[in-house]
Length: 116
Length: 116
DNA sequence: TCAACATTTCAAGAGATATTGAAATGAGCG
DNA sequence: CGCTCATTTCAATATCTCTTGAAATGTTGA
Image 1 (cartoon, rainbow over the protein chains, first blue to last red):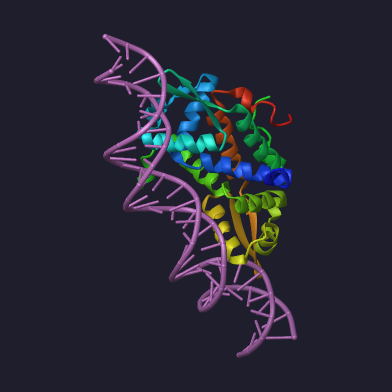
Image 2: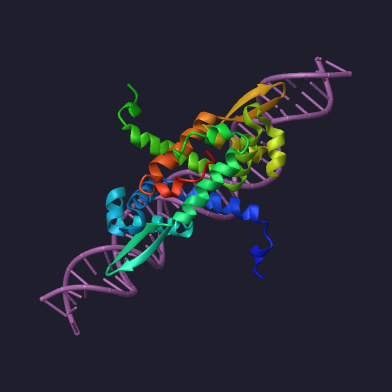
């Protein structure tokens, strides 16, 4: 039995959400994340992301680690490149958290944002 | 003409979004924000929020300043209390940004999150 | 006017995060 | 094998961000 077995679900959800929000709370990372989302499951190699975000390879790499740590993206190897793709379940979970947990008291905020 | 007149809209949007994400990217602030959203336009006094988040008044106050700075909440005075309420336009804008800008490449992520 | 209350402001120390450049890893190719 | 390319790791420095407690602000009610 690990430590987090004892933590109520709601708390881990909030902790996870705030970690993910933190990962997106940086202009470079938000740019990178958007590029990765746009690319979809095929993903993009680190080089393309460094280009898109206009940062050095090593700087990009550390930002990618934050996104990975938050579970928002995944990596796979392809030859000498590393391909980053979105973790769509995580993204869904984050949006779901924001919409359900945060807009509960104000449903009008959430309505009309997604075409049905 | 101020400096930001020259910055493209898209860039300010992203900057604003990442500032707002940063404001939510802290467990205490996320808790406070959720309480404020639940309270709706009536809002809640700082004291109630300190209680809800289980932090000292001064600590709470500095977190509230971050949320205010990001434009996610508003304050008004009521006697000796200060009442914090959500800025629903800002919340809408943030959710809209995430859904439109970030899920563009993967609309299936966004579908099905809001009951229609 | 004074005391009590709700809250904010301030300063300081601790801790986390960002950025850089140089060095390491590991794959592919001649 | 030895090069080169794509990327990560590392260490150092610089820069934010948190938290705390004490002091200040402004409001109300006796």
